[in-house]
Length: 376
Ligand code: SF4
Figure 1 (cartoon, rainbow, N blue to C red):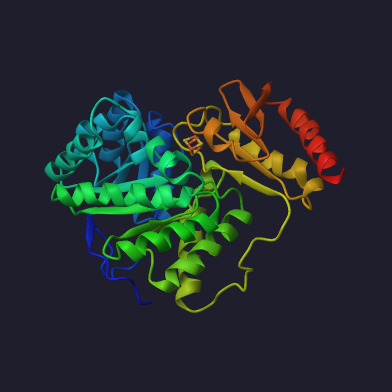
Figure 2 (cartoon, rainbow, N blue to C red):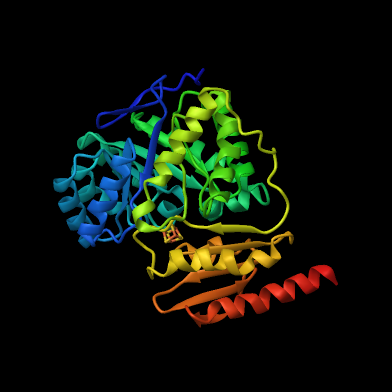
């Protein structure tokens, strides 16, 4: 397939960009400190054909666990720095790539200029033979960009990525890739196209966040990838699915299947827009998930809401308090998981926190009310 002339970025033994095969990657959906579970997920992903496996790190204890995981696998590892960018210093010796989110970087140590924080990360990466991913999420762009771009959230996402590329270039660090993600595949297509027009040299990591469960999660992802990859956009990808622990390798298999189909011209004849009706968004879960019951909850929500599938409504189901409250704001109804209770929202308003075995009943009440409102 013809690709954009991106530069090559080496991530351990894997090459991203510059005509290399599109690398397929995923992330361990475990608490990193549960070393046995994390090693098991890395193995599952590797066995399914993952080129790179990402692990989330939020604390020094997570880094200690990461070191143990590193010692027990030969997989090419990347780390998601999440909120605490300074952990990069002790993380980088164990991995081949670090990912930071410019929005999260803005919030951490606000008194410090962003350029200084980026310089810190670039220096650490350089010293430890690591690549960097600038991972921009449409839902967590920094407030300065949001103010500048108003309703054009795709514009804010693209500008944030361009700004960080300029800082890294200026610092003489070019071993980086960029991702521009959202749970809305149309925004993923628009953002990546806009970015690739301005920086065709920068390798892109493609993905639709919180794509949800199968089969919808695959469909949303296909919709984005089938637009972008034939245009030469995309050098590595992740398919983000809500899956039970032992089935995590399905993310990698799905990624390879989509790529094979695109490469052989087997497009699925899917519509350019998703059919109307109920849209369920759910995160793929990660080390932050607050209760293992999250995966079952996501499935139960889909089953229980089957009766409403003709209605144009969005329900978001998220695994934790860090991203859950913000990422459910745009949905008609949102659920984000705490350790013992699930928080239910109507738009950005909180309805209440309910035990796991009661929340479905409350969700039904809210859903019925919205349907009545739509019909009335
Ligand atoms: S919403 Fe929370 S648990 Fe789910 S993937 Fe995002 S950070 Fe992880």
